[in-house]
Amino acid sequence: MIVVDIDNERISVYSKERQVYDVVEYEGEHYDKDNDLVYSFYCVDNSGHTCRVRLVKLLSENNQFQLYIDYDDFMVVYNAYSLN
Image 1 (cartoon, one colour):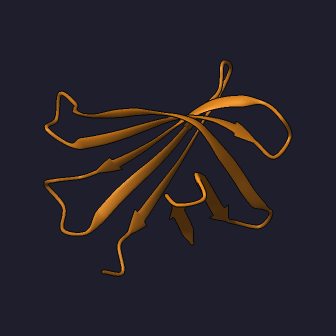
Image 2 (cartoon, helix red, strand yellow; image 1 turned 90 degrees about the horizontal axis):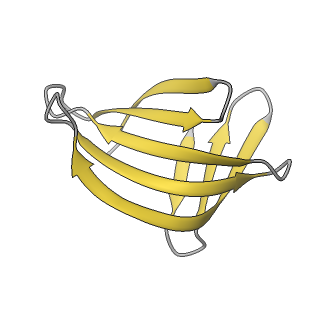
């Protein structure tokens, strides 16, 4: 489960270990080369490391999202579906 809590400026990923990303700056939204809608956040994780979190709404797929967590030396990607 992935929770984007806009009011508290926090993104939580409930995987084997809970991951918490505090939003330092909302970097805006744009469309990528595949015409998918990308929301970008500059964040600090629960270990104090900075990263960029990108929530991508796949416009070609109904209710499907991808969550990218970008660090300097690696990236984590989750595929997710909206329950709404």
